[in-house]
Structures are given as structure tokens and as C-alpha cells.
Amino acid sequence: MTPIDEFNIHGTMDYVPELESKFNIRKLLKINESDIDDENGKFNKKEVKDAYEKYVLKDILQRLLFSLEKSEGIEINTDIDGNLEIINGDSSKKERIQRYLKIYFENNRQEDISKAKKVIEIQRSKEKNELTELPNKKGLRSAFDREVEKKYDIKKEEKHIVILVNIDLDDFKIINDEYNHNTGDDVLKSFAKAMEKTKRSQGDTMAHYSGDEFGMLISMDIKKDTTSEELDKKIQEILKRKFKKIQELTERPQKLTEKNLSEKDFANVLVNKNNEPLPYTNKNGNQLKDSDGELLYRGKQEISAGYSIVEQNLQEKQYFSDHHTAADKGSEFSKIVRILKETKNENIETIDRIVNSQNIDKMTEEFSESEIKKLQFIRNSKRKLGEAFPEIEGQELKEKVKTLLDELEEKNNKLKKEKN
Figure 1 (cartoon, rainbow, N blue to C red):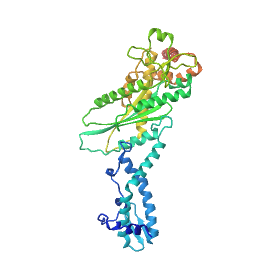
Figure 2: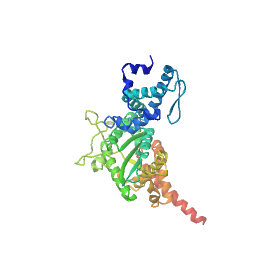
Figure 3: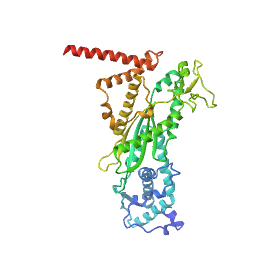
């Protein structure tokens, strides 16, 4: 008995919608977004539709057409557009096959949509960071592509904006060095959970690239007449709120010296309303100690962040790699600003050095070329010096390196003058 005969037994072949005059198999088996249950936001309907058309439909066609060719004794050909043609056998069976495919589709639509969702889940598992379970860089790239490819309606009064943010956790290596890698992993997981709690419905995607590098994708609609300055101010406000909350929720161990405690110098730790340092505790709420028996407190996780703004453009395709590179330059410049303040014994908060990559050239005008090079040298040498002199605090190392560089620059300028 052929697959078609099985439908005939139950009389189902008599109850199908009117047939199309042109037999296009892809059109016949097409699903609409209205057919898809997003399961309370778990799935993006367009993403499911794309997975169905790219993977599931291809499997359906191969399987069904092979079965029909074998059972009906015909040879079927489909062109690149999905038009079906019987090239060997009884062409009168075309209508019979069309009815069968339509009935099959109506009976199996939800099962095939479930297969498309399964494909997405498998893809997502490959696009996740194993430690934090956030999307990895590949996962964020997929989210980026979905957002920037959203249909652009030139008649609308609003335009769709996407912001790609690169985030580095400052001084994360200290955690691994002073404690252990398990503690470091706990900090990363805590940071990831904190990021997730700042998400706004479906407009944000949080990502963990690797190590202490994270990413964030923010999308929103703004009025077309919004100026660049207004847009940047809005983005800064959003990121400041997010980073402030992330810092409050991230669990990071921090020691305090007797001097810190006596002078109530709690710049590196989180405090309560009474300006008392918050304890770093275990799951039972007990304050933890380091290997030397010193009490640990909740450290403030400083962040270096840069971002790149993507505006929809009908003429030019937007690439993740370009905007990731731009955002990365922003986060690198954020680190330089931090080091500059530290060498002057000044504190600067994370929320005051969130860098728009488009403004880097303007911001660098405030520094001389030699000053930028010195700051880059201090930043690059900081880790190696810390490894070579583990007993010297990082701030003191930076000050000594700056003093040395200042002396070298003074000597270099003196030699220049003598030469001229």
C-alpha cells in the first residue's frame, strides 16, 4: 500500500483545500509565524521559521519525494525555486501527489515545527559558554545578525538601533593568583548571573566570550530625528544603570588592610547604608576567610567597557567583526583612562569611563602621544611586574613604573635639545 492509499482509506484525500494552479512544493509546505508558539519568549518566531525552511523542509522533501517516487513508480524533479515536475512516469499523478503533500503537511505541521525548535536548541548548545551558560561569541554574533537584519521600514518615524558592548573584568587575574581558579570561576558565574538580571525583555543579549571577557547586545527603537549626542547620552544612561546593578550583585572576594579599616577606606569594596563593608559569604551566610585566616569582603568588580553603535542602513551591510573590533578599542581605551587616574592617585568609577568607540579620536586629543604610550606600557607591564614582584601591591608598582618612565622621558627630551 502506498502512502497516498493510506490517506484514501480514511477518506482524507477528499477533504483538502483548493489546489494551487502552479505546483510549487516550497510554497505548499510553507509555515507562517502565526503557526508558531514561541513558548513564552523561549523561541524567536522568525528564527524557528528560518530553521524550518533551512533544515526541516529539506529533510521532508528528500524523505517524502523519495517515498513517492518509489511507491508511485515515477521520477520527480524540483528546480531551485521548488517547482515540482514529473519527468518520468504518469504526469496525471501530479494532482494526486499535490493533495497528498498538502494533507501530510496539515497533519504534521506542529511536529515539523517542533523539529525546527530542536534544531535551534542544538545550535544554541554550541553557542553557549560551558561555565556560565551565557551565549559565547558565536552566539552573540548570531543574535547580532538577527537584530541588524530586521526589516527596515523607511516610512516609520522610528529607527532600530543595536549597541554592541565589550566588557573586560579589571584585575581578574588577582582572583586566580591570590585564591584559586575555582574562586575565579565563581566570580565569573556570579558576574554572568548579575548581567542576566539587567536584561530588558527580549531587547538584550548577554554573552561570555571566554575568561574575563564578556559582551552585551542592546537593541531599541528611537525617533529618526534623534541626534548623535542625544543617542549617546541615552546609551550611557542605560549602561550606567546596568553596570551599577552588575557591580552590586557580583560576588568577588577582597581583603582589607588594617589601614583600610581604621581609615574607613572602602573604595574597593561594597558597603551598606551605614558605610560598613559587606562580608564575602558562603551559601550559609558565613563570612569566608583567605588561606591566612583573614576575613574577606565583597569586592567591587571594576569593569572596562567600550561600545559600538549600529544604525540600520539600507545601503550597507553591518558586520559583527567590524563592530566587535570597534567596541574592543573602546574597552582598551577605558583601561588606559583608569591607569591614568591611578597614576595620579585618583579614583575613577566604572560608570565614568564607558567609551563610545566613535569618540576615541576626540578623547585621545586630551593626551600627548608620549603620554598614551606611557600608559599603554604601564598597562602591558603591570601583569608581568606583578608576577615578578608578587609582594609589592599593584598600585605601588604602577607608581614606580610611572616614575621611571617620567625620568626616562625627561632624559630623552634633554638629549633631544642637546642634539638640536
